Image 1 (tube, rainbow, N blue to C red):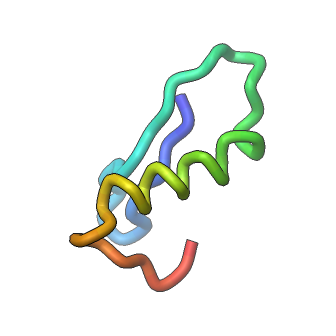
Image 2 (tube, rainbow, N blue to C red; image 1 turned 90 degrees about the vertical axis):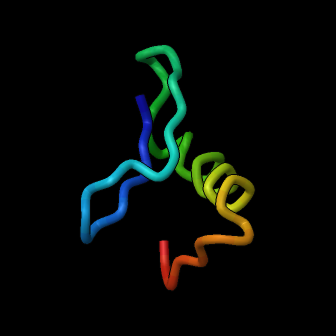
Image 3 (cartoon, helix red, strand yellow; image 1 turned 30 degrees about the horizontal axis):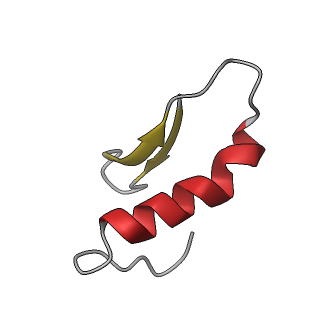
Length: 48
């Protein structure tokens, strides 16, 4: 499981399930894109 979490609360904002051989760094950009799509109108992070 690859997850993006809010650093203040620890709440998971976005996640993706992949096979164990997929590295976190390979999923970083797709997770950010998913976060932008899912929370486009609600949530605008200051930084990633």
